[in-house]
Image (cartoon, rainbow, N blue to C red):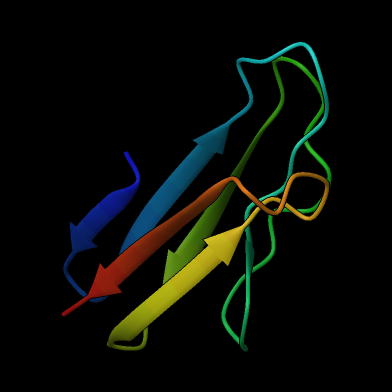
Length: 69
């Protein structure tokens, strides 16, 4: 989802179901999935409360927000 709300301590998995590479990278300190090719996934642990805006480094129009409470 574009916006996701999770409790602190959650693990969020990003899976690339597209035919081109993507990332899930916060625009400020937070997390970076690294490059995910088709079918690959990455899991991030969210231990600090806050709002984490993220983009795909290859496609900056692809954006989302994870809110950790």
